[in-house]
Every structure is written in structure tokens, then in C-alpha cells.
Image 1 (tube, rainbow, N blue to C red):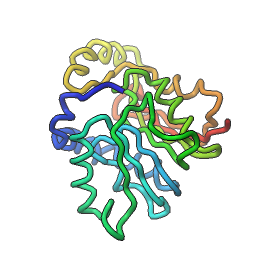
Image 2: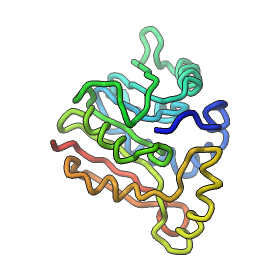
Image 3: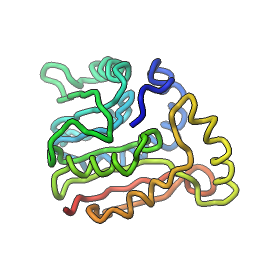
Length: 212
């Protein structure tokens, strides 16, 4: 996972920029993907804590991990007003760290969540491997990520603007995330979907179970 991005220095700007997309597309997908979770959840690259509002009551505790101290502080301020991390409130823990080297023991979590983060990390394959390592056998790995579109003209556009887009956000528009996930032999697909607001289906989401 890369170091501090420009957007991480002022976390509120991320919420402002992404809020229209959350209303139109992301929010519904997050709710569908997270509603069946229970037990202890690891949210990798939690950013400003957008997923917190979608975790069901069946989740005992959420551990958020992010490389940015600013993001974690901002997340806690937001979460406190919604009952997270307060006395007699919902269990919320946080760690500063990167997805390529998770500071947790093997099999520590019932679920691992990765939403819109694999585009920013230095080594997506390593982050997926680490997520699987800290997940208990039979636990669920949740993905909601974007990737290079399948439609040729749109893929060309994404490749063209990728360097410009990456500078302030650290986000790579042209990764093959679905392929990286599907080739894992230690994950069994429960559900998977390609979707997007435009042709080419640049988004990939799915629920996978750890088999090994």
C-alpha cells in the first residue's frame, strides 16, 4: 500500500468528491456486500470509514487499518457521532499500517473487506495474500473494486488518463483486479458481479470464502 496520498492530508475532501458516486452507485453495493457479515471484521484501507454505516448489528467488532494518521483521526471523529468506538457503543479498533504487511496473526478475522483500495496499493497481489492469511478458514473476503474496463475504447481512455489521475489520488485506473482475485486457489467464489455506470463494466464486486 502506498504512502500518504494528497487526498489523505485533508480526508474530508474525499467524502465530498465521492459523495455523488456513493449516492448513485457505491452505497447500494456496499450495503448488499456487507449485510451478511458477522463476527470480527478487518477493513483494509478504511480511509474515511465509509463502510461503517453499512455493517449490520451481527458484526461484533470492526478493525480499520489505514496508512494515514489523518484518515484514522477523521474516521474516529465521524464514527463517534454514530455510536462507534464509544463506551457501550459498537466495537471499533484501529491500526496504522499497510495492506502488504498486515500487523495481525494468521486467522485473526472472520471477514476481510477491501473496497476501492486495491487501485492505490503498490502490490495488489500481496494485499490479497495478506488478507487471506489473516482470515480464518471459511471466513469471507469481500471485494468492491474498479479496474480497467473490458470495452476497448473505454479501456483506451482509462489508460490515457491514468497517469494524470494517479498523481493526486494514488489511484490506478487500469489494473486487472478481477483477474487477480479469481486466480487465487485459496478463495472460493460465492458471488461475483461486474458492473458500472458506463460501458465496459469498470467495477468488480464479489464475496469469496477462504478454503485453505
